[in-house]
Every structure is written in structure tokens, then in C-alpha cells.
Image (cartoon, rainbow, N blue to C red):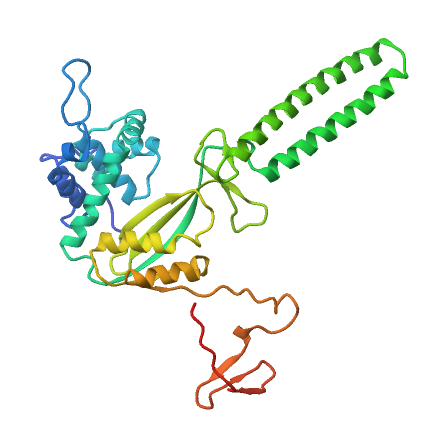
Length: 364
């Protein structure tokens, strides 16, 4: 096995044990997390920094916040995975002082300190602005769908209720027809079958009554939706056909130079069309700039939103959606025509030239 780099013998004892600090480089992000959490006022942000007089000693909120931020930066969201990483990850051992909280403690910390964690994140954005990380006035916004605990069967809309009522009514009609058939026959087996059918009809009628009661709740809801498990979750369409989900629409704004998230929000509407102005205002305030250029995909295109952005000093760059039905009709669309600036004409796919006849100005 010559000519290969060989490691040390696992059974070789070390006369001078290695220091844990030697395994974490000077430019390691864990050192940034450590300094940031140690320097902020945890009590002022809302964390409970005074330990209880009695009972088992608790973990310091600073230790749990370091663990949470490290997991966020390294895409480790699960409390169980964070528990495992704290036991085997050298960076986390250095960051927490070899403390390894269990997953229940980590989950309860996130659940009980939501506003305080948000305040810490906001403080981090302010720190980035003060040290000049937001030098470029360019940012991008996009939305992501996050699935809720609420299943699709526990979410109700007028269309879903109508479909379910029709299904229940169809089942009831089928069972009633089977009962009519059973009444014309004799025998113990037929009677037993009839009793089972009657029980099923009773259950279905109970379901029908529950659906009728749910219709009243859906009508009373402002947006015409009711979710039982997560009341604030909403049914949203996704890119795949028939792959809608019940969840949340998380809006994030990222600055262009260092790719830091400067603003975020959770909305319960599946469309991004009405979020451009609100997210631009949040990003502009977080970055502390007078003018801002905002990039977005065509899902954010809205004339009203663009006007609001321009009024607040934000220049949005949003492609206009292709709403023409030319492709569906088998014709060429505007994107198929190539502009020739030397002749100030458009060239069609057939090679013919279309000269300029007039110019029309229209405000978006």
C-alpha cells in the first residue's frame, strides 16, 4: 500500500491531547456565531436569562441559540438531527462546549422563544448593515411553498365541500338501492347484509350533516377556507398538475452581493402577485438605503404593485407574463419575432421584415 497518504493508527495514544480549538479554523462560521450570540443582549431580546431557583438546571439560552443558528446556516432544521449533530459534529462541540441537548429541549426552545429568535435575526441584519455588507442596492425576491401539518383532507373549500357532498350522496343512493334489492330477497344472510347497509347509511348521513355544518364555517371564513389542524394554513396550487398542497407561502428577499436574507414574511395566499411592494418596503428598510433595485420572476408582475414600488423609491425588474393565446391557437407569439436594430424592423420566423409604422406609449 505504498505511495498513498496514510492516516494515524486509531489505537496510538497521544502524549499531548489535541485541543478542540485546533479543529475550528479562524475563518470558520462557527466563530462568527459564537461572537454574535455572546455580544447581543439576550434578555433585551426576550430570552429568559435568569435560571430557576429550584429544579434541574436548564441550558443557557445562548447555548441553544448558537445551536439553532448553526443548524439554520447548515440546513439542519430537525431538532432530532441537531441532537445527533451536537454529539458528533466537532464544530458544534466547540460551539456549545461539548453540551448535547436532547431534541425535546431544542424543539421547546424554538417553540417558546419564537419572537425572541426573530428579534435576534433582525439584530443580525442590522449588524450586517452597520459593517457595510449591504453596499449594493440590488436584491431579489422569491416565494417558497412550505407544507403544513394539516392534510388535504382536513382542509375545506367550497369546491372540495361540493365534491365531497356529491360523493356522500352518491354512496347513500347506492346503499339505498342495495337495500331495495335486499327487501325483495329472503334469508338470514340477506337480513344481516341489510343491517350492515343501514349502519353504513346512518354513518354517511352523519357525515353529510357534518359537511353541511362545515359549509356554514367556510362561508363565514374571510377567504373561503377552513383548516382544522393548522388554522392559518391554506390550500395552494403548485407547479405540478393536481399536486396542490396545504401550507404556507414564505417570501424571502436576498441581497445580491453576499446573498444574505434581509427580509422575510409568511403569507397565506398561494400567489406572489400582491407581495412585491410589501417585500420591497421591508428590504429597503432593513438595508437602510434610499433607492433599491428589486429582481423578481413573472409571478410578481402587477401594474399596481409596480406603481407603488416606484413611489417608494424601488425600481422593480419583473418580466411580463406571456398571456397571449397565440401559441394555443397555433400562431407565433411576440417572442418569436426578432428585432433588427440596424433597420429598425422585426424579422418574423418566415424571414419577412415588419417595418415600424407607429409608436404607442402605455403605462404598466
